[in-house]
Length: 240
Image 1 (spheres, rainbow, N blue to C red):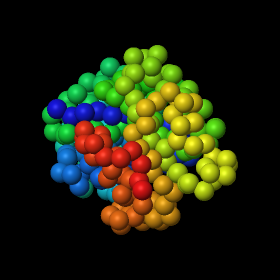
Image 2: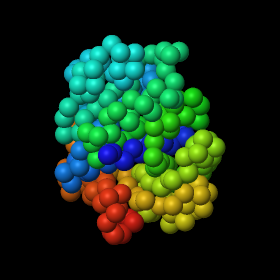
Image 3: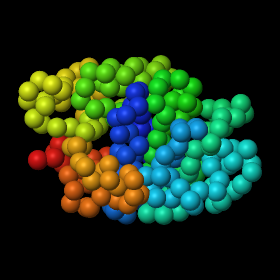
């Protein structure tokens, strides 16, 4: 039975979707069966990050509306993908979304839900099917505050089990006081740290090509470490 994890940020621009893909690939490299679900209706991007934009025919909206089967809607690959609908349909509801995910859980070890930015209905719809959550923030005050606000919205819906990933982390600006340090990010969000991902130009390049960064790139090593912690291994919180 899959562990279903909501990946959220609050504010856009934190690299949440890149983290979702990177973590999914790292779990797949550990022989885990992984499904990525893009929950950003109208603004989906996981298909682009996976280099699969031309291959998507159906999405989870089609599945909810009985226009296709799960086999038709899910795009297989290194990690499987269930794309977000291009437009919102009034019939989408939390109960139906959660039931759909429950139907898919037997086929996977991990289902990662890439939540839309913000604290509105899109976030709460995605949260309906989640067992736990991972907040993604960059180490600046604006993104940290928005991550805290999103976590508050999730807690109000009963989703309290959350961990934190600090993305685009750079040591020098932190030492010079231009960015928040790790302890400040934890204190401001109120979320336990799962790991940190350093700023890595390879991630931006690969988001254009749809190819995975080199396995020894700084971000890839961080994703691997976070994936191992997610699976219960005892490894350091941050990369050396």
